[in-house]
Length: 208
Image (cartoon, rainbow, N blue to C red):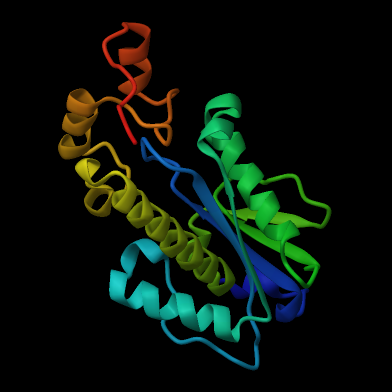
C-alpha cells in the first residue's frame, strides 16, 4: 500500500515515524528513534536502513538530524531486555523515543505489527521502513546510533570484535564468548548464553 494512504488525513508535519534497531543481537541495548520530517526540507535517499550502505546511512543520519522538524533517540538497556523480554523492551524504547520529541505528533506510524504505549493515535505498519519516509528516517537514526554504541564497546572490549559483528551471534562472537566469558553488556536471556548459564558452562569475563 502506498505511504500516502497512511498520511491522507494528517498533515505531514504532525506525523512521527518510529523504528528500532537491535532486537536480534546477543549484546547491547535495543535502540529506537522517532522522527518528524519537515515537508519543506525533503531528504533524498531515505530508505530502510538495512538496504543502505554504511556510508550512506552515516550521511543520512547527519542530514536527518539537521533537517527534521524533531527527532529523538532512546534505548532500553540490557537489564530491561532480560527483565521484560526483547519485544517489550523494544516497545519501551519506542515509547521513550516518542516522548523525547520536542514536538508532540498528532499521529505516530510504527514499523512492525505491534504498538508501544502512546498518548496519541498510532498505527503499526508492516515493512513501514520501506513504505513511509518518516519511518525510514527513524530506522536510519536507530541503526547508526546503535552501531556507534557497539563501536564504543569494541574500544572497551577489543577481544570480542564488536566492531565486526555488532553484537550478533556470529561464529567469531560465539567463539569469544566461549573463550573469554560473558560481559555485563551480554543479554543473559538470549541463547546460547541462556543455556550455557543454566548448565553452568560459562563464567563472567574478567575485565578491568
